[in-house]
Length: 418
Image (tube, rainbow, N blue to C red):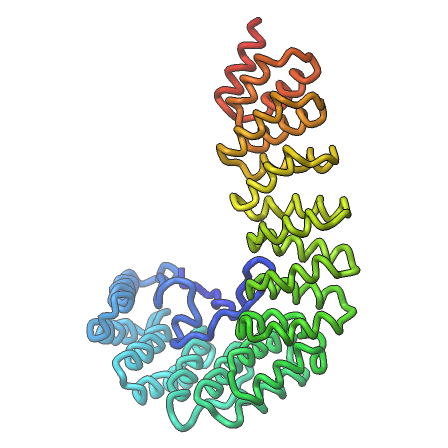
């Protein structure tokens, strides 16, 4: 069936929600998969066959083959006649016949005023006129997607009216959705005036509802060049959400030094822990270890042990070191358990060594939990066979009982048959 879902200009990434770049062609803006997809089954089999042939020709870029097929589809005056007009405009534009494409879109508007293809044709008109001396003005469009597409066309063309129109959108009564998209267009503008306006929003001087999104966009658009601005915002703000957005931006910019400063000096424990988590996601293991060794806070150390997990293999060695050397039993056990989340053969060997040497039952229990998290049924079975302490053995068997592993299942059957 023809895809009616528009590609969302606002995209996602985890915590960072960003718009997709505005499309250079209407088909890229409007469709998820290819320029043409099969519509609902047509009533006329002949029309359906012709439309399928047209689909193939357009998807393969065979414009000269597609045009006569589209003429045949239109001549049937069936349920796909309006689609044929749009795609004929699309093909003509691809062939460099922009004036003919504009005429085709005008014909669609005149003859099929209720067509679901009008929006696609309007986007095509904006694209074509954006390359001329008479671009479509955003104010002329009622639809938000088309308004933004027209605005982006003006911005790319260096039109002097573009920035004032964009500012009117940001400061006016338009929807938050349109404002967020306009903000993305602004972030791409490298003019001095555009960057000044974006800076005002980042600092919360204008449009405070957009401040957090502006912070994230600034980091993406300017990278490390935005570091000093964001550091200033962080230092002056009392809003934890704003500060958190800045910390997220440091991760995007790959700026561990400023994250370390926040981790060491932030008075809000939740923000300090968030900075530590971001360092872990960045893989800044050496900096995390330096903080760990310098602090006396058990909570900070526990947060760092969790951050090592986010560092993946980079954090495995640090966890192994603290699992063996940490004097605080709670922290030592946390390090042991987190080794299971990191996994890897080296971690397994370290865990087995800790289990065999430890006289601390809680640490041995932590090893069992780590091996369970790592999915290591093989070594858990071996431990269950050799463990002399009934309670410890029951704990191991309890873990094996819920593992979907052949070795675990075979061992369970072995116990039942005894």
